[in-house]
Image (cartoon, rainbow, N blue to C red; front, top):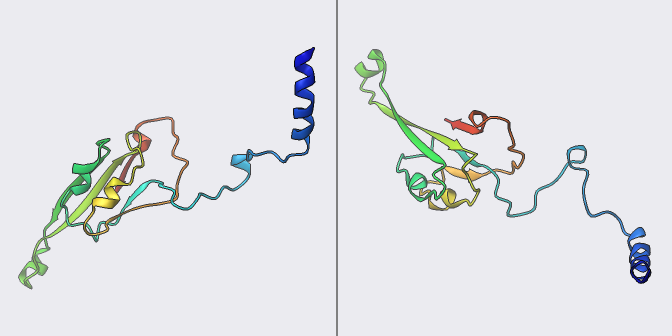
Length: 130
């Protein structure tokens, strides 16, 4: 009976306090400043140095460099082959540390504000960004 006497004042204090939790899927949530979401890729800025791949401790990033040959008409006009980089991100491995963003010399990576990445299959957590 002694314990009930201790709980009653605590109960009375908490009846007047607003809940701390949020009804998440029903209420829109804003992310705090400095939140590290999902790494995103801007292929036009990427030079294919793979510094992000080297420094990713979770081994969650792959960079593929594809060579794009010019069409015969463009080649006749003097156009050269171009390269296009594609990033494959494995969200099931990524720890959202933002190290890849820090080491990119050309700012080809940035962190977005996305936080709801849950899925039922590992294949859906493999993002190919061109």
